Length: 239
Length: 223
Image (tube, rainbow over all chains, first blue to last red; front, side, top):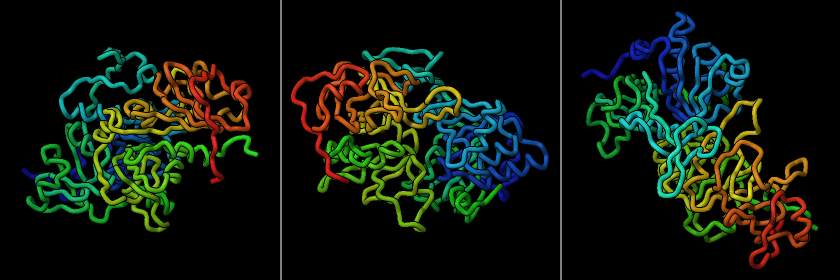
């Protein structure tokens, strides 16, 4: 078993055209900036991987991270709950021009769909969105006198996420609120690729402290001193 | 003479009804102001959708850790006893009925408790975030809002005209003029500004205001 990759490009080599890609993070918190920009750079140089469906809570901010992917033209569709940010121009312009698709999913439903995808639950019922536009076309059922909307699981070809510490078996910890969607996405993708601030030997993380068990993680690459999206935005960094 | 409450005063009034020990989610924007007016001596634990319980005030400028933010993507601090969790657990807290109070803004509230607060209709980029989840599960779902729109039309209506966030979900509305509970599909008037008559209040409300019990003067300090 060899999960630790020496370089980002190698770890990402199997991300290809037309894939669905879950990207961890909530705004800048937990965004795997180095993994994202490695994909952007490869797309600019080779035209691949393009035509991607990107799953994240948001749809990019400013011109870095997911916004850089959108500007580069590699994103066909966004699946998210809140495609707005302090600077949503990248997504907004393309959306209003009809150049990018949007599947809008309520935030808790998005999380639960991803969890269900990782847990082998093809569908579930939630009170969220009952009676709203978001529920149109979805099966409705009544349980104990209340109406619920059926939602389907959400899986992906790849998840790219940012962890704080990873051990060589793929066990992960996260920094503060940066875990957000990442533990769920790690479960729901066929191939989960992690950038970790530090990679330690097995036994380097107390089993009591593991947040994401290594069974959900395929590849780990160390990115010490990772960039933080919000910090970059505030420094005015452009893509 | 007070003709209507300021946003800060509406937030103050809503804060007075949050009980000691409550787990509370405050919506992004105006509802976040409620935290400023927590009565002394009460402990309130704030939940944020992105995965923190018991966050505190904003850090001093320059002290931010941008991995430690709230749902509005603002930097926060932690209170003693805080915890982190992933998004599925966060929304289990929401939908599972574990929150005591959720406070949200509104474009429209209907007398049956329907809420419209996420979309002003076609022509813009739709964005819903956690609003459709938050209106289900909290024991009390409160709205804070001006009583009327900027154009002066009622925000409390018989039936919402804008896309719904949730059906029959709102329990209490704190407005710039009144406090109104939603009971059995009707607006029940609990408090109103002493300077506004019931007739005047009814004239700017889009559905019947029901009087069922005493109507108390809505007295709010300058804040």
